[in-house]
Amino acid sequence: MNGGHPNRVSCASLWWVFLLTTLFPSFAAAGDVALKSVGIRGGFSGPSLFGEDRPNGYQQFDVIGTIRLPWSWYSSSGWGVGTLLMVSAGALRSSGETNAIVAAVPVVAIGRQDEKFAFIMGGGGVLLSDYKFGDQNYGGPFQFTACVGFRSRIAGPVTLGYWAQHYSDAVMYGHDTKGADMHLFELSYSY
Image 1 (spheres, rainbow, N blue to C red):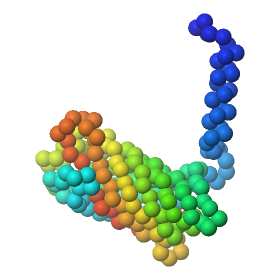
Image 2: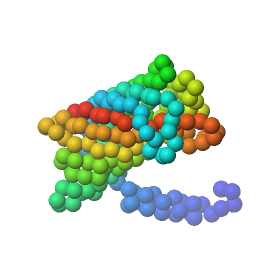
Image 3: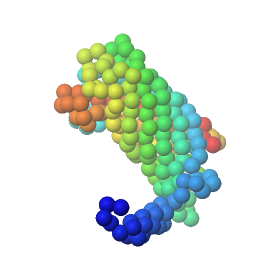
Image 4: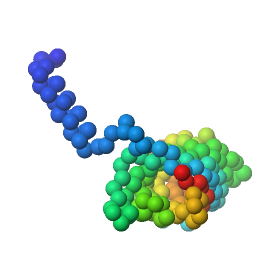
């Protein structure tokens, strides 16, 4: 084994397995990962959240699914923190062009366990079917996204939400690319 002692390798491996299983909950436990909600979103671009206005106006429409992840911490009062994975697929339109957009965004939700209110923030990745809209060039098909928003159950399982979402390549494709800042409104059904 490359001159190393075999018992040291297995002891180190066992230590890491012990440490990781102690610090992080198991994905295999029943009920940990589950579909939480499905819905639709739509919105438009607005003033930049990061100080640089974008030259083109955008509209976005998509379907969104939210998956509950196993990490959550709620107090006896019902307030706390949970983790979610938000996945969406839809269309991004600008300059007479409509392109597909797909996103996966892990988020942290701070609020009530009964979902009457949650403040949500996170970041993830986006794929665009075409990354050029008129004279605006995103640089490439993969983009990063950051979002903040809130959700509130308004009647039984019906949930309304608002998202401020930023798309950018984070200069991965060069310094002359531009992203977009979106204001998205959500209507979803929670399980």
